[in-house]
Image (tube, rainbow, N blue to C red; front, side, top):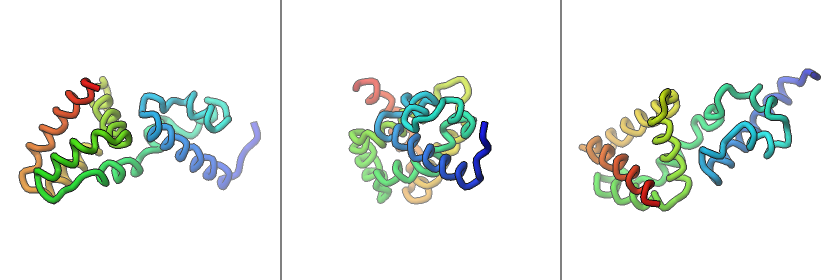
Length: 148
């Protein structure tokens, strides 16, 4: 196998990161697979695996701002209203589906744990008494996702 330069490797990583984010935002987490990424990049699956131990790595720092952009953190009522309304947005919903599926797995990953922790910290820092509201919204989200 030919050795590639650091620059070429960095460019490929950027390209793969963008492909992974695109697949996630357009089709949801369950479609982010080594096979789908390889097909979209027109490379071998093993090549993709050489870049990522876990595909979630490509989403680090990219999906949380998208999620937060849907929320109005003025007060508890605006938080609740904006969250429920955002459930109609596929990107917001896909992020929640990924977090919930990961939380329900036998070994939740660190990115999801940190994402939930960060969500609570940011919201609690801006909206007094929001912890209870966030717990209610997460539970309500599970029920609404099941009703789809």
